[in-house]
Image (cartoon, rainbow, N blue to C red):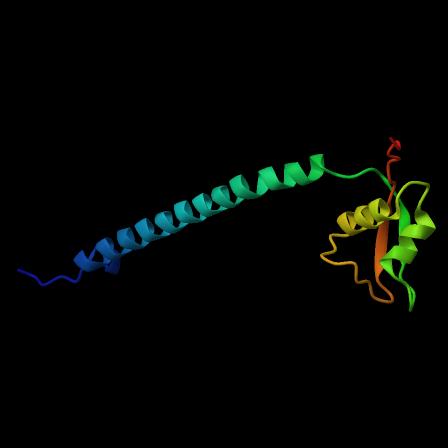
Length: 118
């Protein structure tokens, strides 16, 4: 009997390792797809909600100058009604957590709806 050398792909340990690698690769691919699906499922409703809740069209933008306050800016763009409503609309449109503004900051100025006085 001759002692023959088998090619590397036919040696007993090699076939098993490549199938393990293939299973690992498939498992990782499935996990990545599941992760992406979960992220999309959680992010999509928020994106749709944000789009649906969009405010009235913007009048334009305003660049904050030194010494400006949000109250002063709201008074400039107020078309009647309460200044506090305009301040609140500007804060919401620009996702501001407080009424603090900084020189050079560009603010979106939304159209504010008139609320009828009772």
